[in-house]
Length: 259
Image (cartoon, rainbow, N blue to C red; front, side):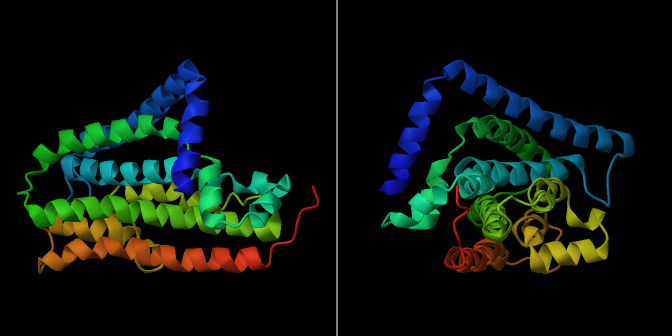
């Protein structure tokens, strides 16, 4: 499979500089830990926020960070896509008889993001016993789909940001509002925000569908709990589909930068 070959090449290139790779992964771990520490200090000061406990918010943080780390690790090619357009490298991509999406995905696979992923997994396994959730097969499935659906949403936003480069060459910083900003926002339960923010990040960019609504089911806060809550995170993949269509439309309108 072509993508696995790209993955292998990226891994080999990183292993040529093992100390640098380890230090970057450690930096990612420390950065993610500082975010979690800020949440802990906030709850220590106020005890609870909008009726949510620290353990529940920690679970929310862990799921969001794992999803974001997976997306950054494997969809990093779209996040740095503007460089390909400016340097004229995307012209070569179009000449190859392979999917442009797979080729762009394979241009940059950032394994150093595993440091952030490890930190989030540690938080997840520490917070789970403190939430008091009674786990069963449906809830475990819900948790897995929350992570995968969240990764799909972040990847979709990266793809939309890359598509903008077909028209502007340079990437727009406004996209970071929905990537880094979206990660920060989704690290807390949605009720801590205003109603219009809740609606936007549920029906337009479905962070609420892949995080908050399933979290209601996991913590027993849903008014009418149902196993169907396990399927709500699939909205992340529904969001990804139009992002891919927008990408295809952008590719058709692409004109070389002349580099």
